[in-house]
Image 1 (cartoon, protein in one colour):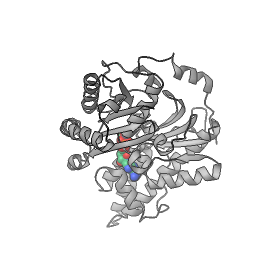
Image 2 (tube, rainbow, N blue to C red):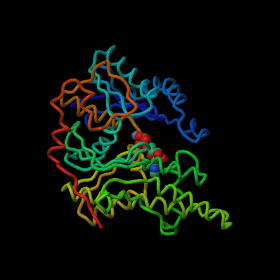
Image 3 (tube, helix red, strand yellow):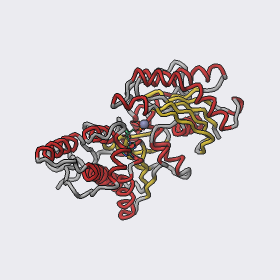
Image 4 (cartoon, protein in one colour):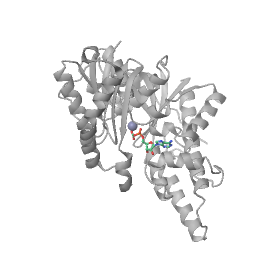
Length: 369
Ligand code: KG4
Ligand code: ZN
C-alpha cells in the first residue's frame, strides 16, 4: 500500500489529492476557467500565477480532508510533463520541496499516464493489457497499455487533438471556452443527423485508410464552410444545436470506429478512456454501444476524473512507488514528452520496456477498402 500526496498544475486546474493505491482519500480541484474565459483560452503566464496563489490552500485542504498528517504520507508526486512549463514548474517545485523537507521519496508523473490511471480509480480491478483511448485538449491517441510505465502508441491524430477541435468549433459557434462541455450540453437539444460531416480519414500511399490514426482539421474546416454557407443563405439564427450535435456525433463515430478496429486487431478485450473528452456524453454513448455489440469491456472514469485532477496523478505515482521507482529531485519540467519515454522520469528501472513492447507487438495491420 502506498499513500501519495499528489499535485497537478500542468494547465488551468490547480489540483491536490491524497490517494492510497487505487482509493481517493481526498481530492481538491481549483479551476481557473473563469479567469481564462475572457481571453477565449488559457493564458500561460496567468495560469502560473494563479497556481502559485492557490496551491497552498489546496495542499492544506487536501491533507485536512484526508485526515492524515505527514507521517502517513509515503511519497510526494507532481506532474512534470507534458504541459505549460511555467505552470508545471509550480507544482513540480512545490512537490520536490515538500518531499525534501519531509524526507519522502519524490515521483514526477507524466500527465497522460495520469489520465490512463484515472481508470484504475474507476475500476480498481482493472489489469493490463488493455487499450486506452486518450482524448484531451492536447492529445488524441490509442495506447496499448502493457503495464506500469509500459506504453505503445498505436494510433494518434495527425493534426488537432479531439478537445482542441471541440474548443475551436465552440468558438466558431460563439459558445465560449472551454468548448467541449458547451457543445456537449447544446448537442442534447440537437439532431445529430442534421448535417453530414467528414470523419477525417488518413489516406495511405498504398491505398485505403490508416485504421487507427485520425484527423480533425478537415472536420473543423467543414464546420467553418457549413457555417459560412448557412450565413450566406441568410439562415438566422444559426441552428447551433443541430450543428453541435452533428459535430459531436461525427467525432464520437470516428473515435469509436478506430477504437473497435484497434482493440480487435490487437486482441484486447478491455478499452479504457481518459482525458477531458472522455466526459463527452456522445462519445460515452457511441463507445458503450459499440463495445456491447463487439463484446468489449469499456471503462470510463467518472466525469470529474476525466478532466484534470491530482487523484489520477497520485494513483499513477502509487503504482510506480510500489514497483520501486523514484524520481530525482533534479527532475525538470518538460512541455512535451512521449508516453513511451515515461520510464526516463525514474531512476530505478529495468531496460527499455517500450522497446521490448515494440518487438512483441510487431507491425500494425492496415485496413483497406
Ligand atoms: O484532460 P483535460 O482536462 O486537459 C488536458 O489535459 O488537455 O482536457 C481538456 C479538454 C478541453 O479541450 C475541453 O473542451 C474538453 O477536454 N472537454 C470536453 C468535455 N469536457 C471537457 N470535450 C467534450 N465534451 C465534454 N463534456
Ligand atoms: Zn489532462
